Each structure stands twice: as structure tokens, then as C-alpha cells.
Amino acid sequence: MGKVTLTPTSGVIEPDFLEYLARTFDRWGKLPTEKVTLGTREIAKFEDVLMGAKLNARFGFEAATHRGISDKDGMEHYTLLIYKNREAQEAGEPLYSFDTTIYR
Image (cartoon, rainbow, N blue to C red):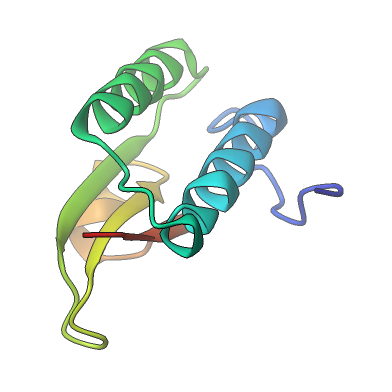
């Protein structure tokens, strides 16, 4: 994978963490083609890392994750939305979003 094209928001989220997110969701996106399920243990470990990054961010950020069936394709998805702060989260304005299909 090449350089991440996501632009980090100064003080909110670090460039290396955005790279980690992009690599993780890219790797997870390949699992369904290999007929491998994204397990709950992998998701739990990821969410621990996510919370650590949130605590270590200079100004912090809000993260929302969701696992469920998509209305668009009827498949199970795991989605991450990152917001600048709680007000942006309430307004529904994510800075970044990541999504992957979960093979069942």
C-alpha cells in the first residue's frame, strides 16, 4: 500500500494513526475474498488501540464504531467514524470514515 491520501487534522489525529487505520481496514477488506470472518477478538483489540489513540491525541477526537447489516447491500459491515469533537459528532460531520464488509 502506498502513501495514505487522508490529510490529518493537526492536533486531532496523528498521520501515523491514520496510516494504521487505512492499513487495518485495507487488510480487513480483503478477508471476505479469502472467506475469512473478521472476529470479535480482532475488533476488540482494534477498539482498545482506538481508545488509546483518542486518549493520547493532543485535543482528542470522538470515534463511533458500528457493526451491523447494511441497508445498501444486506451484508454485515464494521464502520468507524472519526469526528473532531462531540459537537461535530452530534452534527453528523465526520472527519474520516472507514468501512469493511464482514464475511459470514
